[in-house]
Image (tube, rainbow, N blue to C red):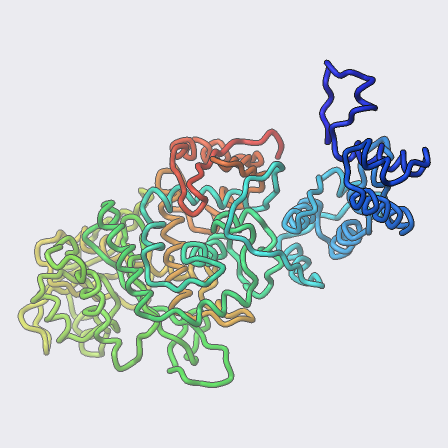
Length: 590
């Protein structure tokens, strides 16, 4: 299009045109209106004769077709330009509303499809179509409404983040607040240097972060992908425009091996050690992951959540009691090898740093190992605290102890509260264990029968010993959290995801939550569900330009705490976002 010129000679504008379109118009005007021959037009306008005939032919074809716009003149219509010539956008919005999508949900879905609508234009379409205001709905109703939508959306996936003029909306814009911790602790580097596979279209970093995005966002059913795959905020978390569809996750998982998971867990373990996030103690516990298939290739394991034994996978988790970091996970435990799990974890812990002696205590349940292996731990210089099973003989021995020999001890908890328990300790000799062992009997612990602790640490005060073991229940809390929030026992949900890989991704997501809330006063010991509700589940608008991603989060009560933390990460660059920084701001609306 020509630009205006304040120094234009108006007579030469018509007699000596410079723009190609203007020249063509005057040439055709001479040919048709003035009756000049092709030779005369060519000579006066500077064309060849063949060019003049070609212009005449093309002009006749365009004007004779009946469905083309005028080649030279355009009718400038007043008012807003129409954006939906074929009615596709309006039809999409109405169909979504019929499925009880809210206006923000419709905005997110249409943003992913590239429609470029606003909240006001969506509201106008809905109002003009005669829809009333939606009634108040709970989260489950919203999830069911979105997941039942047909036909399914399909948005093209792109790894390139081109600058965009307009902002897009996300119901989980708060998810991007986890990215600074991935960069700060070098987790992104560990992912990019891992042995995990990558595809032609989606690189390794984007692949792993796609799984992590689902874990962090409390998605319980991967197969209901319209609840998450159209949210561009979740896609941006992984360096994509949108997350892949559910079938991709199943296909990717099938290429992951146990060796890849172990190697990645070792890389993460080195990060925790280098940042002094692990204490001298590790709590270990088993959990049961039910198998819901028709075939029965698995062993039966006791499930405390369901109160029965069922076909399942037995998994082990290791947790640091100080920061709640999960440093190890394994779903390949079979009955014949479960007694050696403690030794396998010790090999894992020391595999990269044989000289590292920071691990001093292992705390676990009685079924974890044998007395022979306890003797091996003692020979390795590892202190242990475990529970001895209550046989008939030892119960009779406990009942025979005189009341005057029992001690009352106050045991404090992390929250400053505590309880009083009754204890008695003695040294004993156990078959298959070299040397004496320290035994502690505990009554008034909330159970019908007394608990029996065994340890090879004869120097730790009795109060500290009991408190140290009581914190082992934290790992059981974490396991319950993994089952409920990270949906460890629902990982298939219509698609197949390898359980060991799913557990590894759940461990990474859990640790990211722990890092995220570590410096939040009053929130450092909150469960993942609380952190998600308070901070991560925050809608907002996102702008992407050449050098920066700008995130404006909707206002909520916990937002000032989050903004204070995010202000410390302004200068961090993210390689999977093409080196951009992220700026977080509080929006003016709720």
